[in-house]
Length: 166
Image (cartoon, rainbow, N blue to C red; front, side, top):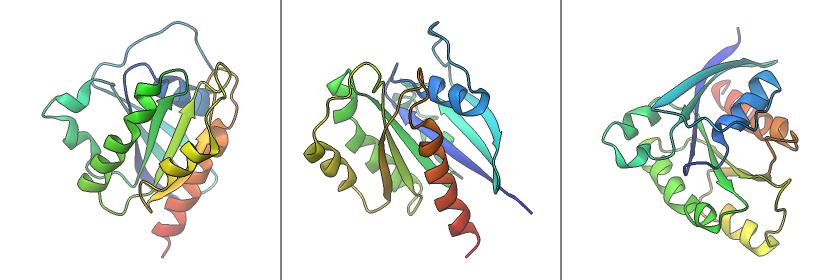
């Protein structure tokens, strides 16, 4: 029987969370920007599981309901925009929040929009990875071109499925 579990997409406003979900679930991308309001839930069947992807709006973390969205998650994808340093700097805050609300859940970091800006030092990537032992991968992605999107979700899926089978 396949595992069914929840993964929450977290990140600042406009980093590409929805675009990454759409690329992964439907293999599609739209230039039209539509801001997520509240949460949008998508489902993806993989070889080993059914992933329920919770795409949370970027400004939600300031609302009291936000922590409720994270409860029950088996993993997180934190998304930052390589064209906006502020979103990369916010990764630490997002990691702390995930660790606080759902301890021991694995985290993947998506450094999105690598098709526009692929410049980030190896030292910075290493410092992001060092934020928590729960960070299993830091991956440069592009929802637009599809670069490493499958790798991002597969890495987290394989980790969660292996953990659920223990």
